[in-house]
Length: 245
Image (cartoon, rainbow, N blue to C red):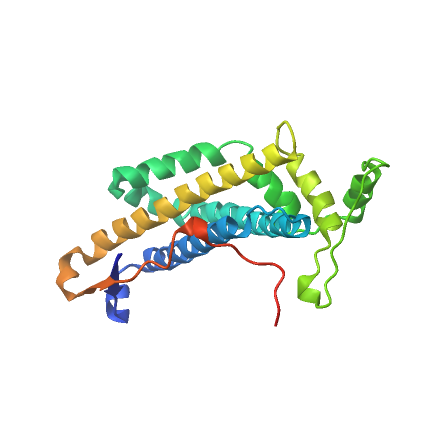
């Protein structure tokens, strides 16, 4: 595959006014985080005929989902402060490509109402459930329920699945669905979609900023085309849980 390397000097970066320069770095950072977290989520969740492995994958996917949802929410707050409240949106929205404009339109529509992402972020992403919340969750468990833990001889191989199952049930209860598996699928689909809009917008916004301030010195930027061998299909990778030192 072909990768395009662009090298920018400090002097060239300083051609962007301060607000634009800060935004440029912020949205690049956001796009990196969401790209990596989305890949990890795909790698984390797989299937297995072995119950212990299947539940380990479920735990991994649940944890990464919560982090990803929190980052998506914080990413939108970043745009609210550094793009909209700063006044930069008035100048640069009109300079976005059609794809960038469409991504921003979808983001505005999505975050303009009560969302699943904001609900889960506020209750679960960067907050541990309170004593009262866990107490109520425990009270709601049927008496016949069987709760499991998997204890490894090394702590890295222990999965306290009962804790994850109980917290995940509360998180997924926010999602109208037929069952927990359906709720998990809906959550993954929604966060992948919204994450994609954010990453898409960030890329096109960086292009708009670049063209506005570097258009007269494009020949001074260092461009290099690099051939990088593909490291495999994204669906071929799995994050293992039970590992040895």
